[in-house]
Image (tube, rainbow, N blue to C red; front, side, top):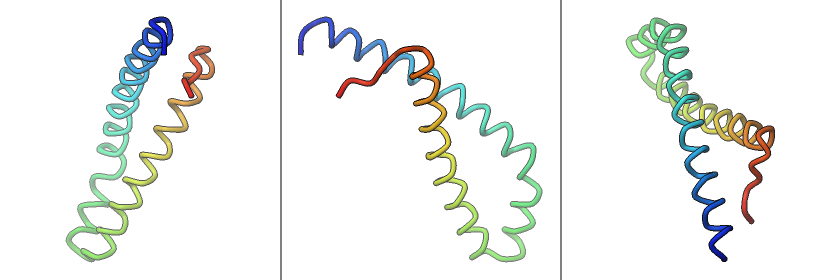
Length: 82
């Protein structure tokens, strides 16, 4: 890797971290507003189903954040280094 590729990698990493931060905060606010009460009821009524719902939310968050970040990086013209 030459210096130019290293700079590009660091720049893309910084942009990706900022995008992830913004998307995670937005996701947290949406989940907190929309799902806090149903998840609380689910926790008190059926702990096993609550655990599976939590795992589902974690997986969905990871997939959606990766897809959204990849889309935004492609739109900004910041290709990934291979």
